[in-house]
Structure formats: C-alpha cells, structure tokens
Image (cartoon, rainbow, N blue to C red; front, side, top):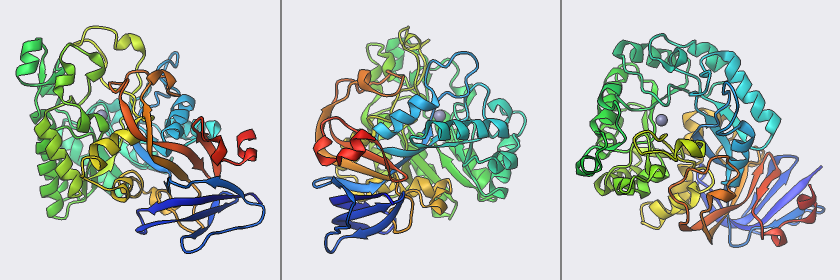
Length: 446
Ligand SMILES: [Zn+2]
C-alpha cells in the first residue's frame, strides 16, 4: 500500500465548494481522505509539504494539438512531448484536436491517440473526433463509432463547418450520441488570405483583415440551427465581444451553449502584430481592448465557462517568415496558468476557486469526464491533483519548455503563479526544480 500525504495546503475543490487549509491523503492512486479540521498523520505516509500552496484537482485542457498522427516525420510535437508539456503546466488531462494527418475521422485513429497516451503514461490523453470526413465539411464522419472508440467530443477544429445542412446533421448526431460539438468559428469565405484583425492597423500593415463577423456569423448560424436540436454546443477560442453576446442570448433561452477563452485573446490585442511579429499571428486573430473587456464580462457572468490553451506547436521555420505566410498559433500549456491569473484574478474578474472551476469542473462536465471523477477532489476518487504556488514569480522562457514548440508571444514576460507539482493517479508526474525540500526522498528517486 502506497500512501502519500499532501500536507497543509489551501485545498480548493470547485465542484464541492471546498476552500480550506488541510491535508489530502492518497492511497494506491485514490484520494483516501480530505481533512480540513485537524491534521492527518497516517503511519508510513510519504509527505509533500504544501504550505502556502493551492491544492486543487488536476487541471484539464480540452483544446490541445499534439500533432499525432502526422504522416511523415513528427517534428512539431508528439504525444510524448505534449504530455510532458501538459504536466509541466499543471494539466493532468488534455483532449487532442482532430486536425492531424490523417484527421481523426476514423475509430482506429481515436484508438491510436488514446493508446499513445497510455504508453507515455504522463497526463491522461483523450481524443476529439471529426465532425466530417477529413474535416472537409462534405461528408459526415461516423460520429457514433468515434464516440464508441473513446472520442470525448466532436470538432473539425482548424476549420468551421460551413454548410448549413451538414452542420445540422452533425449537431443531430452529436446530440443522439450524447457528446458535445466544439466549433472553430470561422466562415472561410470571409477570411481568405486574412492574417490579422480587420481594421486600420491591418490596412496600414498591408495585411488582409479578418473581420469579427467571420466568427460571429458562424456562431449565430449554429445557435439558430441548434435551437431545436439542443446539442451541447461549445464555441472554441472566442476572440470577439459580439460572440459573447450571441452565446449569452442563446443560454438565456436554455440552449446548452458554452464559450471558451484562451490566454492570448485576454492579454494581447492586434497591436502585438505591429512590427510584423509572427508570434502574434493567431487563428482567430488578436482583437481590441474592447473585445477583451467584453470577453471578461462573459467570463464573469458564466457565458464563457471554460478556459483552454489551444496549445499549437509549430516548427520554428513556419514562424520565421513573413507575416502573411507564417503559421497561426502558439504553444500554451506551460504558461497558461499564470497568464490566466494575470488576466482574470489580478484584474479582479475571478478569484482562485472560480478560475479553477473553469479549468477543472466545467471542462470535465462538457466532455463527460466528470463521471470518471476528473476535475474534482473527493474521497474515493482518482488522485489527479495539482499543487500551485500562487505567488511564485518566474520568467517565461520557451527554451525551457518540455513542448517541442517555441512559438510563444509571452517570451520574457515576468509572471506570478506556477504549478509546483502535478500528480496523476497518485503518482508524481512533474515537479519544478528547487522544491525538493517539500518532497519526500522516495518520490525524487522514483
Ligand atoms: Zn481552432
């Protein structure tokens, strides 16, 4: 019997509302006891000193790109490097988007991703299946088979589904198979060649603008179709304030629609593209201060209930080119937590329990992982736990990332808050250097 005691931390469990100093005992990979009244002192338990730290459910990120399968050579990321990046950022569970090569439109590939994740044995790796074959929007994917093979959601991420009739069929299938649909909200005909937010800055830089309407029009269309279907509909990586208004209105009629935010859309504006810095090239693009304010309003009132990273590694050469030709996206897993703290807690939008709810309880519920105990701390439940030092100051250095990706616009930022240790199924899967005094020797040798 292996027992591990996490002693003296601020235990935050958004699912139960617990927020108190105490001890968490893990026995054989499961939470055996949570004690906030007195201290636990079980014989033979190894002790992690969590004083001054937050002890919370392992973080979930339902939007990552680990680039496996990838025909030809794996160069951008692998499930191994992605998993290492996840636990380094405090994430114990991630969902991989299906825009791989080939796309995850076949049950065999869903099984492949899950199996690779098990072999790497760091974070829990899940797969999202395609809505349409090859993500091309023309032929519906075998959604029931994908779900049966283990897909925890459906998306054509990287592309939105443009055809109205196809969107309806996909939402009906998603509803029938009790899963969720995650839309990449981009009308292709409105964004051809677009590189950044439409407006005076794009004009001055000589770049093709990407209007907010390209995002909003797809969300509006989807919510109209879904009004009489009632599928779990999730709008990914929102960039526009108008999108928040649309989702808020649909939710007020009882439609199960949710919104998602990413760190870069809350901390950076289109101004980051000035000077043609390709690390600021995102899909959807960075917008304006007004959009950021409206996204934060949507977070404060629950319209946006899920925080994700859209972790999107790219090889250096695909960013070391002119702005119009560079790849979209950034890596996010290893710096998301302090960036969210800066955007949301330091700005007074959320407190720690409500922010952690958006990284644990809410994403687990959307993809149905709450049934397996993910995203919460409870006696008898799986011991996926993140220990966070909310005050630790550090500098973001992509060269130190476990991810293979280095494309990050936050390079050199001084931030506060970091996952010190990440525990998956009762086993320490990551700890940062310098906290060895908090950890029992046996864990360090293991
Ligand atoms: Zn996307």
